[in-house]
Image 1 (cartoon, rainbow, N blue to C red):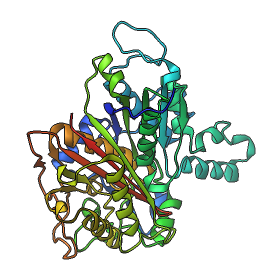
Image 2: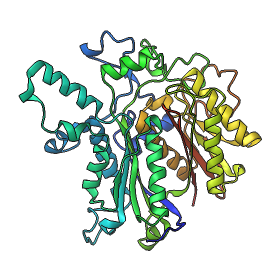
Image 3: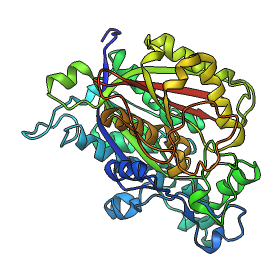
Image 4: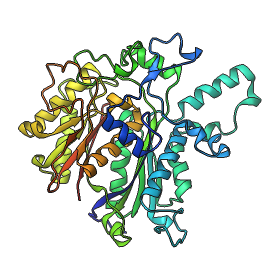
Length: 425
């Protein structure tokens, strides 16, 4: 099919997060300002400098059938669970190509998946190495390679829904989930697909990643107060808290959604991209790269900054990153930044790395759909360098009338910058 400029909409959402096992409980937790961060229990974590994390509220291996769960890395388990919810939420009751009286129909060759992970099956890799070392070659699982592949989550979601238009896996660290959704939009706009299941997933709560991040001085060491450890914009913030889970959306061309009478959450206006080319693991301090991504978004979409009312910020609770992001936004948006209600949902979910863009897209979509911005928690004393309107303590109502727009920022090690824009319908 020749390239097109089709409108892309969100018709389904799914999530499994530290706040709940589905999108509804996650949204409820966000609005309640509930932290998902808890102490890490077990001997394997006892000697680590960081002994807190935001584990998923529901163990995915207890949700999926055992024969399937044992063949999937935890990150793929999360992705399949979130994708199943999103698929059903969009009105599909069977895999692509199967006729049904109750559900919608999509041809397999018109359906794609783009599910990202920043690290892939790292827990499988590390655990199976321990098996090899302690129990010998014959005890290593024959499923190890498919489980640890970064494309495993996307491939398994593709198998679930019978996607044949393409199964893709962007890997750009903590920007991966957002980049996946942006890539999915381009698949639909270019005519390569009518429907794409897209999002991000991560499961990296393991001693080695935690030790490595801690030694980079990137993580909060507030082990005594886990629920207060993730505190974007607060003067006492000292690093991010690792989280796990997945967030997935079903994207469709507006024509396809209308033809089947689908409920539409919002329109996806597009994405902005850039690279810092500054440092492999530190943000560019002036926000140059982030500003370029936001400007790229405005140029690509024609979005009027005056229409923006909400931002789900990247805001990981690091001293450098939180301020650099807002400096960049001020540089591009100027005074328009003053009327944007900013939420930092990582204060509750922790940082899901490659899954963050997926979860935070779900949160942004629900904020627009319900016209309600979730709060940022743990802001006891706002950093004096924070020059923006942070939603603190309680949810905030967004304008009730007319079209409104929101953006979701995701940035990753390597200098990857991705920003997505959405509008009510």
